[in-house]
Image (tube, rainbow, N blue to C red):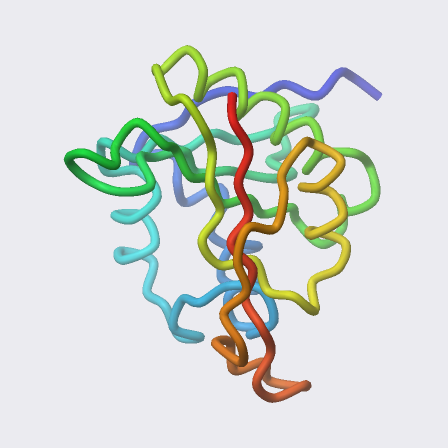
Length: 163
């Protein structure tokens, strides 16, 4: 098995992540996107500057992707945010962790002074623990702010770490 490579993609390659992106969003357990989110909306949000989209691939197969962007506009644009997805068949291989490390370095290079995740679903304990291992702290809880398809209202965490 060859080494995992992480690289930036443009709008023309977003189609490569769409199959697992669509399935993850439609599952309704980790993202605040509409369950029937269109390809065009997803591609626009993830690849239109100032957002940047990166893929993790091995042997020309895309196994995950992440989005890096300013968390806010104007006076808040010194803090970055990220969103991460791993193809279901590639979970448990350290891909999310590799993408997190890569995104933190990309964020530093882009001039961000911190990273903040605005909506980490509390029941997604694997992600919460992963982000904590990478230095993120839960700095806020929004009670019942996520309508989980199986669990009903679930808290959302705001997670932050300095760079």
